[in-house]
Length: 224
Length: 102
Image (cartoon, each protein chain N blue to C red):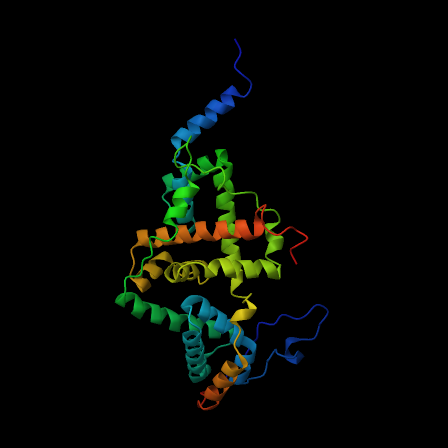
């Protein structure tokens, strides 16, 4: 077994080398139970956000950890332990999508179609922004990403995306899977993929604006 | 006879608006551009349009923020999607039964 690195950065002020910091294993070890403690939540969230089924998500985490254990001798330590485990989980989930994509029609082209129509309903200039729906300035967007409450809003908003749209969005935006690979994996046409990605972005952006960045969102004092 | 103040600027904006598709089409093209799938001609039209349209300019900037947030979201799991103690124990028990290759 090669050197296992964890993702934990040194806390501020901790100048000890990785080898002596707790949680940073620099000696050859194989401790799958620690994987559950250190990366279990991360992997479970990863699987759940894509599969939307807690039982199935746990099954996939288990499968990924077992596969990691069986192939531990191939882990070179070039990436962090978490990245390695998440990579195995990602491939297991993609395989599952590939199989189920062939069995069912995957597109969800109706999602947000009506809302898109309303967003660009403009009496004076057809197909231009509706005055009430036009994007507002997002003040301090960078700082928002550091706030716990923002992430709660973000997860609530992304949780509202229909399963298929969310799956496509996460594959593209989080897993960085290319459009061609998503189409091949899910058995959909590029045009259908772009429509779903576009609607997912429209819906998520609007949801974040209404619930976090917009004028009607909680006031600055109200934000934790 | 002198032109109304700002008259040329207004005419220029109207000309550019005439040359580019409406906002609905621009944001759809902008989404494609984000996926590297927009043609050069479309990229040019997006650039021209966002120079004269505040709504589209903001929208396209916010898509970048959305992308950054999506990237970061995996590292910020909501408390409700954490493994339960039972699930954790179940996983550990199962891993103990598996012979390791090391």
